[in-house]
Length: 188
Image 1 (cartoon, rainbow, N blue to C red):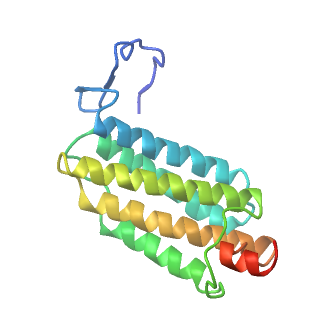
Image 2: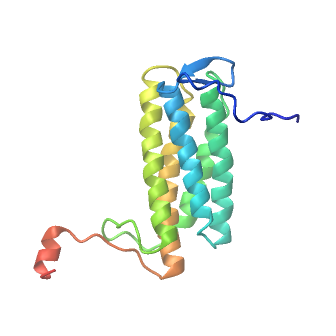
C-alpha cells in the first residue's frame, strides 16, 4: 500500500466542506459527515477505554471493534459501499452473551461509575447511542446499509455488558441507582 495520507494539512476544508472517499465533497454539517464524526468519536473513546482496561478478553474485543468502526467509517465515507454484514452483528451478539453469562441478574439501573474503566465504558455506551441516533437520522434522508445501524445498536448493549464485567472483575459489584423515593426512606 502506498502513502495514503501523505498530506495531513490540506486546507481543503477551510470553507466548510470535507472530502469523501468517493471524491465528492460535503458540507461539514451534512448528516453523513456528522455520522462520520460520531463514529470517529466513539472509536476514540474506545481507545481511552483500552488505556484503562487490563482484562485481555475485553481488550481483544474492543480492539476488534475499533477496526469494525473504521469499516463503518469507510461505508459512510463512500455512499453505497457495504462492509458491515450480518456476521459483524452476530459476533457482537455472541460476545455479549459470553460476557453477560457469568454476571448476576440486574437488580436496578446502574450508575455510570465505580472506577475509571467502568465510567469510560459507560461514556462510550452513551456516545454509541448518539451515533446510533445519527445513523437513523441519516437513514431517513438517504439509503444506508441496515446492518450498520444494527451493529451500532448491539455494540451499545455489549459496551454496557463490558462495563458490568469490568465492575465485577475489579471490585465485584455494580453501583446501583437508588430512586429519590428509596433515598428519602433511608434519610439520605
